[in-house]
Image (cartoon, rainbow, N blue to C red; front, side, top):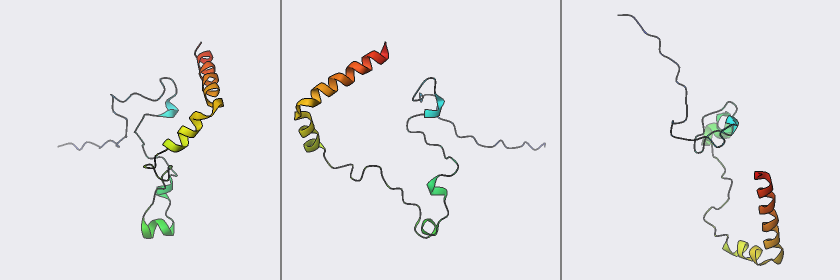
Length: 95
């Protein structure tokens, strides 16, 4: 019986997962995070070894309602004008 060499596993996104951008592959795919060299969780610091890696969330409290903050900003008279200006700029970029 001949021995076959095993191929190195390569992590690839599923076929049904569309990339973020059809031209730029640097942006990757949504919800697909392959490991990269030099990530924080790979650092063998004393704290990581003793306690394990703790990933700090981007949002401190994702369950905090932002209704009060947003409603105040939406009542500002300049907000509607700023949103309109932003949408006008977006429409110009699409042309």
